[in-house]
Image (cartoon, rainbow, N blue to C red):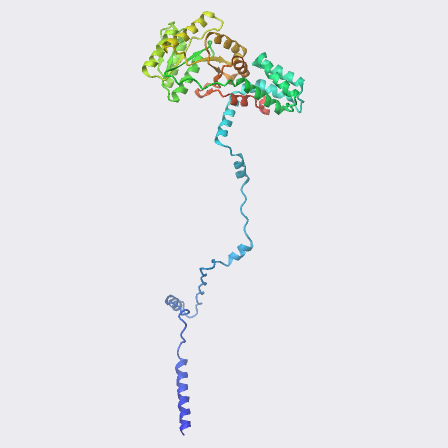
Length: 414
């Protein structure tokens, strides 16, 4: 009775526990329990909605994060883009700024010497022909071209002596070596070791001399423009008192560049006008006096004597100091006549430098070699056009490189 009663009670309790546990929802672990927003989304979606995808597991801080695409990228790496050919060419062609400026200067000089290069330089280039041997016969033809190009017999002999020596020793093997030899010899002729212009005194004085028609007054105007631009206080002296047009032209240049001018009456003594200008410059703090002189025929002794008087007068005005520079202006279109002018002016006054004008309009640019080579007086400026900036300071290396570079086919055909 007792055993049966105990079994009955156990059955009742087991049934009661089963009934209670059947109606309850099992409790999930906290880490898997849906958040309140997820519960709200589930209620809003309704009973048939698909549950949202489970969030992707976060990578641990010890391992770099990866996506499914990364293994593919690692298996098939994308090749680096090759540099464009234009970029490589630009980098290869890059040169220092100084070399670029020099190349531009040579190119500008080459254009200014187009007439000369289209003349005897083009004739020189045509002598070589196709694979023509460098022999004594060719050198004789080169000699003829140089003589007829106003280089003169004296300078031509010097150049040919050098070429023949190089040819005999086997140094002239091809056309290129001939051009290099010509450039080297021309540079040797033009390199006279000139010092910088002597304009440190205050006032410094530049006398400009030359025959009529060479461009003296225009040269003075361009020099005034240059030195005014450089910050100097410039005074002009109208020493050509025999030509009213010369004084008027100088006045126009003075107004154009902002330089005052000292002038005298027509036919006044040129020395007195220049003396007054130098004294004015000393009293009023001018940096530079540029003095025009009467254009004179170099074959007329009285006129050359007057030029000597002007030089002495400047010395008196400067208390015994001579003019700082005496520029002889020569017209390159006159060829060997310019060499003759150089001879006679140097006998009269102490020429310190040459200004060679109109080089852009002549095939006789080679005349510069005998002018410098025979007298060892430096060329200071050359004129390559009508503009103010076309009066350029002379650089022998740039000039030689521009003039004696082999002409292109277009130049030779002109």
